[in-house]
Length: 241
Image 1 (cartoon, rainbow, N blue to C red):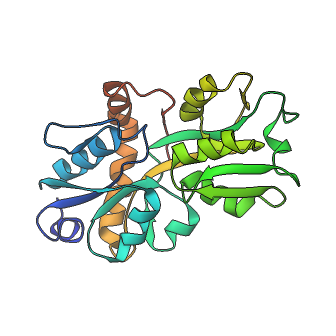
Image 2 (cartoon, rainbow, N blue to C red):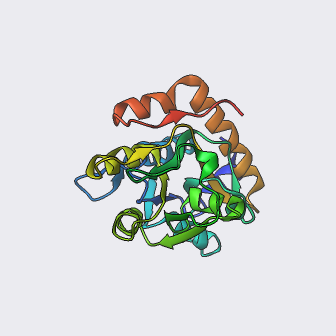
């Protein structure tokens, strides 16, 4: 292992991995010691093992907070959705997993397809600064996007205020739809959240190592094994870059 890679990615002798706790597909539990468990923590541990250094998890309640901390020297790698706004300061790998994002609509809704959502008068509830909210920010031109803090709050706003659509990850919406008689999840996706590994842009050698590591992990079946290990539904291995 190149000493330059280790110096860039583990300058303290430990790989500090920023983990987004709000992604229920990638963080599925806690260990006895309180560390996060799931596909994302396992990916971070695999990077640390390749580097030959210990791992230390740095948890964040939301992905936006993790991204905001890129210049604070609190994490060496961050595991979050790769979005253009975040990529301005973070050098991302290609995705290692993908998650479909779509809409939930209430019973009796006249909306039957994703391309009918972005219209005047349609109000969309969404968890603020999630990867799919960043997509909505760039792409929604006519509908009104109502941002609230957290997944449960977005669902509550959609339900309690009678909104026309709830944006979310398909696996989470599958749970939400069960509590709303007549509600439907729209077929297809408006985006697929690309879960990746990032590091500070100045760490060019470390970023190149991470890109190669992710491609190898996908091709060798490592990512698929992590998904199977944690029995995650709705998460798929991303295609080769």
